[in-house]
Length: 438
Image 1: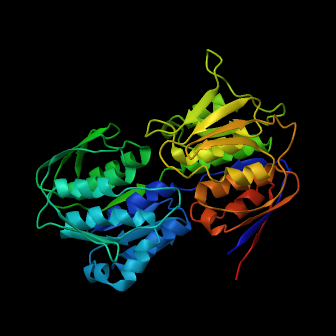
Image 2 (image 1 turned 180 degrees about the vertical axis):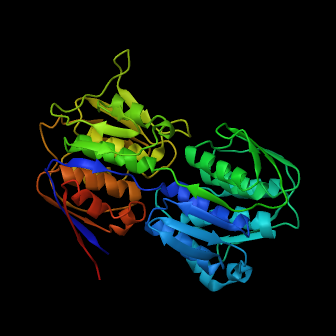
Image 3 (image 1 turned 30 degrees about the vertical axis):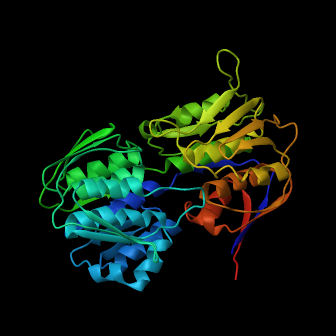
């Protein structure tokens, strides 16, 4: 278990470029299984979760060639379906939540897909029902081995169907879309997720020969085709990392420029940070955060009631940034409620912030009230353990703003979602050291 040693209280300055989007990469990489032709993908982030999925694809028989930093070619012309029934696959698939998205393309192209119960962040229950109900609607037979926690779907030929999803699940929508593009007939998915990363997947599939309409809306109509071909694709920048750097700049009163952010795909993110008082300037396709010398003030509602920041399916505010917002609010002028609706244990890291001197009332597993210090009292350095990707980065931001030297253990959780984060932070002036574990 590796550790970060952080000397806080220093201003940062410079430019930082966001990595390719983790959540897009997990979808796009699974889509290479839909064709026997070569697919070239650029701007793939070099992070643990993505690298695990690439390794899994390689074991499945996909021919993978790294052609540059973040650039790969994939060719799935000799897929080894026997690997899916091996003990090795049962172990490999458990370690990554994104592995669930290989099921849709395997089912669509080969008529069968299997997966052990996937792992990922310990942030509450995340159901797989939406995925498998979608496959069943397309005509697949479902089976579940309770002893091995192993799921399977099989079909001689998928047939298009109308379906109303019980939740606008991003990974569920992606999985069903990847199965439906090779189904016979027309599939209509209502209450589909419409995040930019899902739009990216649909656009890529259309370039490969799929017929998907309604991209960007909550109703996708898919005309099934017999086969798909190769294509080139480039990942969007990671919007969660962009939001993390916005929060970092505000908490450390630093002037930062975040480059090549794809502004049109950021949705509510700039607006929500502005509501908690952070100045965000658009400079071309960059975000400039000026030095917040006088801090930042939370904007109450027009009737002067307390601001509530909550998550919602796109185009609402992403749940992945609520922990960042909560951390930044600890030094705001004013108070706010953070309401995490979509996961029930993502706010449990606040005890670490309270230990650092933050004024936070955890109302229940979903809601916390934050009373900002307005920088009149800085957070105090401490020793902590990263519970998951997003909470880990929130604690890192808190440590960089705190007075004294902090220690964060279990930083492998942060490495799952952030590429070379310590090197990139040092480049803008952070005092952070990585100590490798045994």
